[in-house]
Each structure stands twice: as structure tokens, then as C-alpha cells.
Image (tube, rainbow, N blue to C red):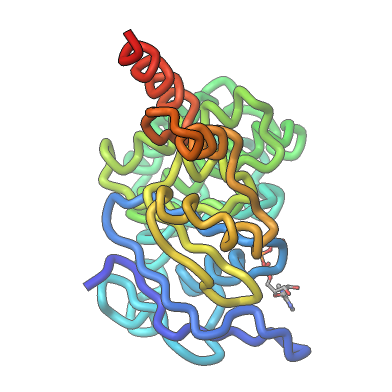
Amino acid sequence: MHLLETRDLTHIYRGDVHALEGVNFAAERKSRIAVIGPNGAGKSTLFKHLNGILKPTSGEVLVRGEPITKVNQNEVRKFVGIVFQNPDDQIFSPTVEQDVAFGPINIGLDETTVAHRVEEALHLLGIEGLRERVPHHLSGGEKKRVAIAGILAMEPQVLVLDEPTAGLDPQGVADLVAFVNRLPEEYGMTVIFSTHHLDLVAEMADYVYVMDKGMIVGTGTVEEVFARPELLARTRLDVPPIPKLIRSLRENGVAIDMAYTYEDAKRSFLNAYARRG
Ligand SMILES: Nc1ncnc2c1ncn2[C@@H]1O[C@H](COP(=O)(O)OP(=O)(O)OP(=O)(O)O)[C@@H](O)[C@H]1O
């Protein structure tokens, strides 16, 4: 049994837009999953099915093995939290603090629990200083943190992030990566995210689903997917510079370990250098 699963999921929007066609997707506990693919591939549509915002045209979504249609809506929302691409779509309270409290209040938690969860979420995102601010007056990156805090305050087991780095500055991206990477080990959470930046896949995922035209066209570990440049090219994505350089060096006879991130590459280069004596 998977923690979260879609079986033959098909979604046709009004106007005969075939956004998803027979998608089989599965996520396990504590996994970090990237969903990649070009604009319009169906990533956001898939995500909206994962907590029942959309209803399938055909196929089904299963939460811990149970059809989502049989699970109480509140339970589903507690289980799977989605942070949308545009934070303006989910921020609407007069202050940051109230906004982060909105979800927990809505699922009927008592005042003390709500206060505790809000504190923890503000702290985790490092935005305690913004608590009295009007969300609509915040910068894009600040709003993104507020949106994530609002979802985390629900303590979901699955956190879905739709293009989480959109609008973040480089330090904001680094902070987000470090923060998200702690969630599986420290909180037992599963993280599912979409991105157009393959560097982020290397930094933040263990497993990858490649989508194109509403279908899953490839899956595998980061290593497996990056080893298939033709698959990435088909979806208008390219292998990032670090693994590309290291692969090229290996093909040219340099004994160096494969690496996908900056830190791993540094280690590989130093090891190769040391081996040369
Ligand atoms: N509400 C809607 N009504 C009709 N068509 C829609 C709707 N939302 C999305 N679509 C269409 O469904 C397809 C999949 O869109 P979706 O937003 O899921 O793709 P995506 O992979 O998330 O794209 P992006 O990378 O641009 O965010 C696209 O052709 C899009 O135009």
C-alpha cells in the first residue's frame, strides 16, 4: 500500500482540454519526489487531485490505500497540504498570524493548539518578525513563506509544493532547500514538488516523475533520470551543468565519482585529485 497514489488518473477540463491521461503516481512516507515537465504538462492539475480539489474524469486517487472519495474532506486536507504556485491564491487574512492560523482553526483545533502550531510554523519559516504585517504588503518571497507556514501549521504528512522557488532570491532558494530537506527525517513528512530547475531536483529530490502532455513519460531516481538526456530534452529540460561536466569528464577517461550537487562535485574533484597523488 502506498501513502498516496493515483491510478489511471485522467482529467479533462471543460473545453476538452486533456490535462491528464492515465497517470499512475505513487508516493511513500518520508520520500522526496520531484515532478518535472514543460509548461502545460499537467503538474499542477495532478497536484490538485492529490487532496481532492479536483475530481477525476476517470481513474482514482488513493490515500493510504483508501479511495479519496471515501475519506472525510477535512482528513484529506489535514493529510495533504498544498502550497500553490502563486501565494496570492492562498493568502487572504488581515495579518500574517491570522493567515497562518486560518487552516488550523478551520479544521476545528482548539485555541491553545492553534496558537502553538502558529508559533512553530512562524519559527520554522523564520518569519516571527512578520506576524503583525498585512500579507498583501509583503514581498513575493515573504508571501511564499507565509503560504508555506499556513500549510505546515496543519501538520500534513504530505507537503506538496508547486514551483516553490518561483520568485525567490538565491538565498531564499538556499533557505527553502535546507528547510524542506529537514522535513522527511525530522517530521516523517513526504515532500512532492514541481520545478523547471533541474538543479533543484538534484538538491531536493530522491525520485523523479517526468511529465509531458498530461502523461508520465519517465520515472526514476535522480541518477536514473539525469542519465537520460534524451528524455529531459524531450520535455525541453536539460541536464544541469554539474552532472553534465562530470559525465563528460568520465567519458573522457577521468576517474571521478558522479555527482549531482555542488557539494558532492567538490568532494568528487578533491577525491580524484587526492587519488592522483
Ligand atoms: N481551469 C482550467 N480550465 C481549462 N484548462 C486548464 C485549466 N487549468 C489548466 N488547464 C490546462 O491543462 C493543461 C495542464 O495545465 P497545468 O497547469 O496542470 O500544467 P503545469 O504542468 O502545471 O504547467 P506550468 O509548468 O505552466 O505550471 C494545460 O493545457 C492548461 O492550459
